[in-house]
Image 1 (cartoon, rainbow, N blue to C red):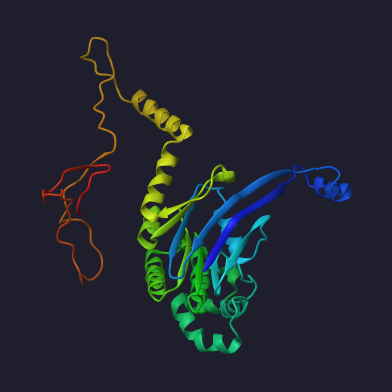
Image 2 (cartoon, rainbow, N blue to C red; image 1 turned 30 degrees about the horizontal axis):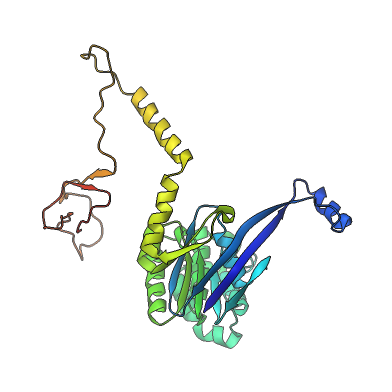
Length: 325
């Protein structure tokens, strides 16, 4: 449903506002800007029914890529082919007029996504129920919290009969119950053959929802990497934690911690005596039957543990080890 070939997007960065005018007057004889390549040479293909996560550091071009696919930005070079109706949730407030009420913005946003007024009338009650924002539906959107705005926006795109859903980091502002509702909808949409392009910094959500993922890197340092969601997420985390800046930050934090730990007086040289656990080893606490609870006890967790491959209960686990929860 989506085919991208040698996709690139270059922004012109001006040091001063006046340089924009000078560039127009120069008529190409001189350059008053520097180039910033948000994306360079990106190619991939998404098939019908596929759910693809897009991950990467801040500034790697994730949001730019989605806007190019949705047509709100124009690429510098390359081609894109999209087959099917797209419904996008790109950023909070996109497609809404802050002066209009939630009710009015449902009609406005749905019309932008291609629905007629008659079609919106048929689905209006379902949209209201999905958003679940009560009497605020008749208040201006400018009075909404970020969570209420994303509820309203998701309620619209969930009812436009789209073939492709494009979601950019929008679910993170909703409460846990709304996130669960959205995840159930996305899985149902996927089971019905819809395609999803999902941007998130939450690797757990990407692995849970997506079977495939795309890794973007800042300023097109190397070609886009596409593969299984689990493998790509592991590669991303490996790159993040292997950066020199992060290693320096961790080392500085360790030194700061050691400087605040009292020296052992019984040692001749007063050397620092600290028991440092092995790298990437985590202690597993015992299950607490007396932990705080809430609700009406319609369900109760009576035990939880990590088990080794041969069924033994574990008191510690190590990164990379296979365990059963």
